Length: 359
Ligand code: NAP
Image 1 (cartoon, rainbow, N blue to C red):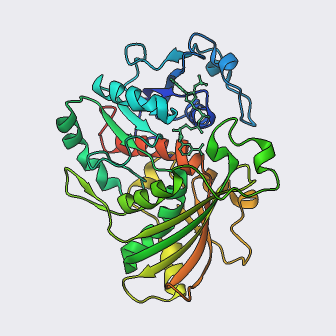
Image 2: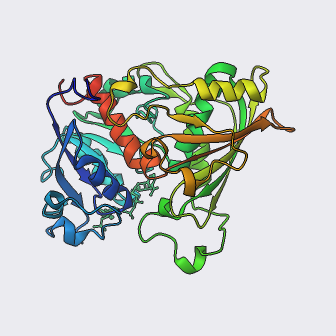
């Protein structure tokens, strides 16, 4: 049986912010998805009414599928978008009002924007790490009077950091984390950082990024009591940097552990980890969410960003840390694993669990 064969009905979905960098990746992933049918694309008033092929400056290396190029871009209005499953790649300014409006109108919104990641009744989910946090959705609907829901995807560097931290926290407990990021230009959307600022340069500041990385790692690794999520309490300190890399965020992590463990124990925990059960059924789940490399000068974004179809995090240089306990380097595709691919995987998980799509 091929992946996804158990789910026969294809669910109609829409993409909000479909013309941007993340939105285009959604379009690419959904144009030929076995469980989802890309029915509608929406963006700002600047794009609404135009053919998608005209409104979007297509960034993909593969040609834009003809059937999508001809779609008319809709405004981000829940009265105009008919699909019940909505992937949002909206800019945070637009997401603030639009995403709750869609949830109020009965739609399940899988968002990539920062606005609704932190409330305790909004699941902030990495499918392999904390799928049980989806159990707060009933409480969310009750608290907010919505018939739909918002399910959030994390900040791209928080996702790349959390995946290797998850097996370490599960096996040894985490006491504190120091994380330093080297973030690709594509993380800033299109057209992103001006070439004259970033070529041959490092920018040691990304607005609002460090608090998001710190608090989201804690929430991902926190616990749900069925109606609210409590963040983990270990402290996280983040330094965020923009570097002249096109795609792929690299993070250097130093970790203090609750229980004593050697760097070899930690490397083994990472190598053996497959994440939550049942994900093998899901079309976007990589065979291995974490790929451990022993090559001393890896991971590198140019060489390994496409690992596992862009859905695996490559982890290397696991070694003792003379200040904390252990340190390592992790790298992942910020747009696939850190945004669109992760949202599609979350939606597949929800369909698989009968939380959307009525299967
Ligand atoms: P982007 O390239 O700037 O795209 C923004 C999208 O939002 C475009 O489709 C744009 O439509 C639409 N939009 C802007 N203002 C709007 C308005 N007032 N009403 C309706 N639509 C509006 O940004 P991006 O990098 O794709 O990021 C999208 C979201 O994902 C952001 O919230 C970002 O923080 C988050 N995110 C990005 C990454 C990444 O690696 N890039 C990773 C994780 C999360 P028009 O083309 O019509 O203007």
